[in-house]
Amino acid sequence: MKRIGIDLGGTKIQGIVLAEEGRVLATRRAATPADSYPGTVAAIVRMVAELDSGSGETTDLPVGIGTPGIWMPERGAMKNCNSTWLNGQPLLTDLEHALGPRVRIANDADCFALSEAVSGTGRGHASVFGVILGTGVGGGFVVGGRLMSGPNGLSGEWGHTPLAYLGLHEELEMSAGSELDRRHEQANALESQLAVRTCYCGRPGCVETYLSGPGWRQTHRELWGDDVPTETIAKRRDERSEQTFFLYSRMLARSLAQIVNVVDPSVIVLGGGLSKVQALYQPVNEMLARYVFSGECDTQVKAPKLGAESGVLGAAQLWREDGG
Ligand SMILES: [Zn+2]
Image (cartoon, rainbow, N blue to C red):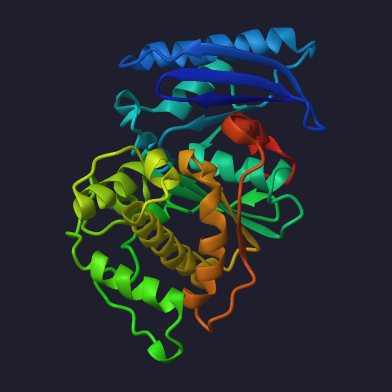
């Protein structure tokens, strides 16, 4: 069965037709009509019509749409969209009205997790936790090729949980006096200099305020008074940048350990801009066991395989036989 995938972003809308075996048969791209909800609905409907007519099928294809927010079925409205003109709007209802009951929508982080689980790094794993580390922090959880979802639409939203152990110094067994212990001791001292951050969601100490790109940059600025882009901090080899890098890796390992403790995924796949920082994977994997209950961890944190297309590919997977 061919399927249409649409990735609704803040600046552009991407669409594809995906063949059963996973080949992309057609692609479309259009600018998102910013600040116009009716314009956004019309642009999606237009793109679906184009993909339909070019597909060579006589019946309408199923459509999966990745959105920058959460669809609340009970309320019949979108929420938490950073494309704010979508918030409170009956997006799925309006699309079904225009396209028929062949539309499914999901959060873009969920689409990322699904695509990596079905055809990316997570392929062959029983369960996959997909993590977005970018301007924001989010995620999605896929078990047996199916996205986990619940009544609040919040599955995978670890970015708005409190950062684990924030303000609590690690007790170290210093007897070994290892280089690693020295680094953790330094990190304890540095972390105590950081102010507790208030998230845009209104709560203090959210993971997102520390582990997003802007959060990483803020940590470096607060510690050293040096305001430089995250990519620069990650590439630099001076002592200050290395300490910020260690602090970030440690916060990430601590946070991911909470996910392991709760849902114990077979693999964690990173996505978003910061997933490109290759130097993160080794230290985070090494540190994970330190924070997981029992002190052992077989779950690996891995790089994504699909890149920028993962959102639109995941959207098309929302109508898999065993997915959605
Ligand atoms: Zn928050």
